[in-house]
Image (cartoon, rainbow over all chains, first blue to last red):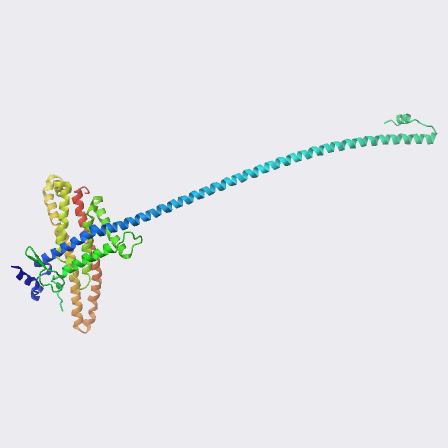
Length: 178
Length: 255
């Protein structure tokens, strides 16, 4: 058919013919160009649409979800740690409060005991003092009595020595007065 | 040897396959240098985006990280430009971006072929995009999609504005394709021209041979610029696709 001459014209590569004319505007090359463009572009489109696009999308989505999951996990771990710390601090505060209360109670008990012991001691001391004062007063009275007796005896003796009279004890006492 | 800067854009059958592989509608189909690069682009993208990725890999490898980065880059681009309901076009936009990006980058390898430096390829891609936009618009809004050409304005301005809107819509496939095509073509032509200078000066002998270092340094600088352009044009192509899709999905809601 008419193909044979067309073939030799496009492929016969006559150098002078090639040099003449602007290669991109040589319409006899267009069918080949469009044919291979359709095939390669169609092939690439199919690959990118069916294989590459979903694959890359899956890779990006996977990574994003993994990272987000890890971040969520880390956040949860942090919240857990904070909760644990709060619990620890609460326990610590409770223990401290109990310790303080116990110490306070002990102190009050001891204070009460001390006060009681002090009061007892005061009472006993007061009693002892009163007894001692009573004894002192008794002793003073007896001492006074002894002094009077001694004075009367001395007076009787003096009078007897001076006068030879025997003076009765009552008279001597009366004479001495108080 | 061959200093014609346009030579690099010539499409030739390779591997000695001088006979057409098949005929479609009477047109012969050859396996050409461009076809080889398109196959390389498709296979390399597949390897890079499919086999370098393992879904359960928590810490990505370098390759997987780049694959994920490009995925999220395109997903964010669609989301910003068209909103949530544009994401169902993700496979298409992703394919367009990756195909154009890889074509541009593989074209930067010296001695290879730049698939996107051919107007047939870029125009086909642009028509595909615009076709998708038109189909989406009519499926979503029915005949109401034509409101896209009717801006909010008084009726006497509409007489002027509607033809402008229609023309601007119709020129989109051309601007979309020519932008990519011209950028690639211009960059690679410039590299070839400066490469020709290096050869010409170097073979001139004497002091001129020493001077050939100047265009050599320029080539390095242009190469870096072209790497940026290679990415930028792929990005522009994809973002314009998103913007056109956004109009088809939401008409003038965002204006």
